[in-house]
Length: 221
Image (cartoon, rainbow, N blue to C red; front, side):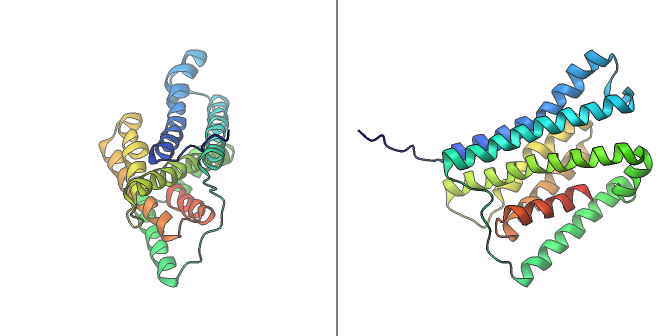
């Protein structure tokens, strides 16, 4: 007798979004519990080598979580993230460009200068390269929060013009910065940035490749 195929629900996609968020949280386990026990020093007191080990371990973990979410979405939910999206209209490109500029402005105000330049000056070439590889993996996971969160709420509410995924990203990854950074302002900035990135995902017609590039620009710059 042929078994009936399991119906995919919004909870299936939301669970994947929360797994991606859990992957981000693994860094806190490493950075605030395990590694300080091993190194005998808090994160702010680590040597360059210890910091590079932390970033490498975190990237490997985030990569594993990202692979699991992408694979499970395709295998169990029939959702292939790498399918090509529809072409974009000129006004969509214009709005996305404006969103990137706005996020760059937020970053400039928050850092009191250009983030990339300041981090290069602070870290030097080696740490700068490792940190920006770390950012690329971080972008992967919050992109997955946005994508899976969007898919979950669209499945429930059948409306495709609301950036549900961005709201979820802001409420998880964004507000988590209140606790990890100890700053309400940083958390609220993350909430706004999450909303903007979720909107950008819709503006690129859910094309994951374009979305990832745009999100990298919005987050890293």
